[in-house]
Image 1 (cartoon, helix red, strand yellow):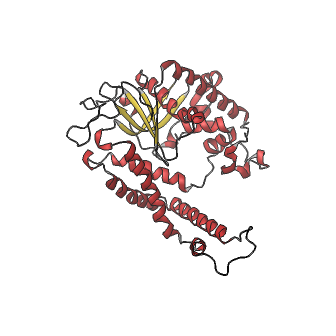
Image 2: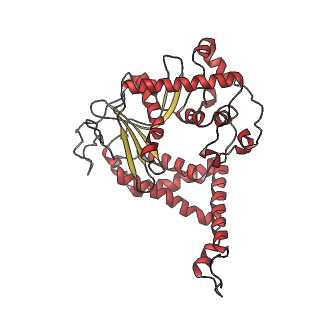
Length: 374
């Protein structure tokens, strides 16, 4: 983990055992300047009432494949949730709720107790998501069983009786039997979190924070921060949880795209550059990547977002969202509709909300648009 000078790793909570560290300052965090402009909000509330805005995920979609962007942001085609994605949602929700507890109660056992509770709520509120996850787990188990039953090519003589391990692997569990192991994998991610950070030792400024602003060029930005911390001197630290493993060094720039987006939004809102961007990877091994942005760098990044916005606006004007083949095609949910794979997309429906929101002045000068969802 890289360390940046001058930024406390935690904002201490007096009286909590283990809360002190060499970087603690002994003072609690105060409110962030201008926090009213970036108030917390339910990520799922009133999305349809908001005008289109550029978000980190949709900006990344357009960079990867303009047609994918269109399918997600304009057509809003449904995508079946994956077990890995829903596990990420589950872990994020648990970590958000963890800070609702008194500081001294933020321990692994309490966090793991939240896993079952949050999952029960997800299953009750969106049973189709729970069913999709269980179906995927069943398919994986069936594929494992099929692979175990396949005859080996090398041996000339097969044993009279299959090994016990093969027999066990061939037994396909019912979905309900697979769920505990899947939930346990979420608990393992929480173990990694506690190995990286002691949540008893600080109080976040905000969790699931909506940041929404408009650049001077007219490009609207919107996104949700996993967590915003404020140190004793008022410095801002953006924290984002990732349930996968840390990227290789060559891919760190891609991983930081989202964080620079948030940093630029906060620079617009507060007039100050965040002190630290912190990516917390909870996958195998666990790792933290930290980065100190600079104002000039964020303004150069702003020009990238403006170019993406302009390209989206132009694609909307012409209806030409071109596909771009790449590694992501292997797991794209819309491959059957993609011309790059001999598919036929539905007719472009147009995006009147984007045109109405931007107006002729912004439309001619800056272009672009994005999904309401962050």
